[in-house]
Length: 98
Image 1 (cartoon, rainbow, N blue to C red):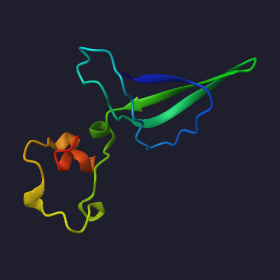
Image 2 (tube, rainbow, N blue to C red; image 1 turned 180 degrees about the vertical axis):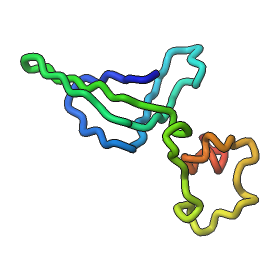
Image 3 (cartoon, rainbow, N blue to C red; image 1 turned 30 degrees about the vertical axis):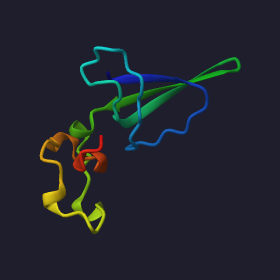
């Protein structure tokens, strides 16, 4: 999914995570996904404004959750062993709460 079209006024930020919910059943990535905003294109037509985000998978963007940004009481043995390294950008994945 290289692009996501949004309708209405949004304020995207390059490098920000974008939460996409309610993806179609059978989606290979599940029902929600948090890609990284790599850029966007705004389109104005009369009073209609739409924004097309260019997104990428966080692991391909080099986005990670630095250990120093984790809560100070988190110890390595508390990290969910089922967490894939590719999902390590999200504290909820580390804790098995995603």
